[in-house]
Length: 130
Image (cartoon, rainbow, N blue to C red; front, side, top):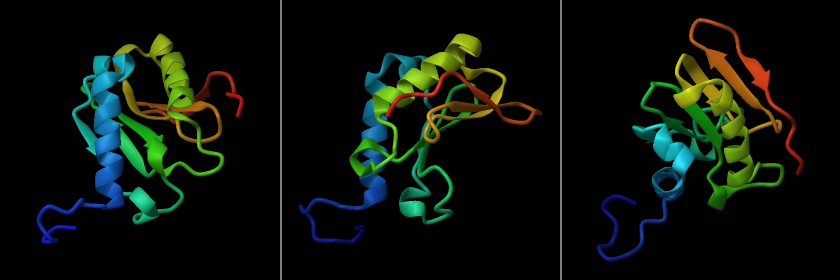
């Protein structure tokens, strides 16, 4: 961690997850098009609330894209990054650049969940196979 021995790898789960998501955001066309402004790793390991997404992207439109666990920290039942991107593609068909959405969840239940600004959340899309 901070203040550790110089030259040694910093093995903090939140840093590892953050770097993985920054790489994903910079190399995935759908995420590039969203203009990701920030990666939120404040709940890695469930340190804020174990029931909530561990990570999230904040997009250029101000929408929060709840991603779940980073691929390197995936657990049984967690969707793969490609499955999450498939769910995101379905949302983008309906909400280009995620404009007008407060948040999108692509991490649980095999369906995307969207919350338009000022409205209740809605489940979209087909269920993904596991």
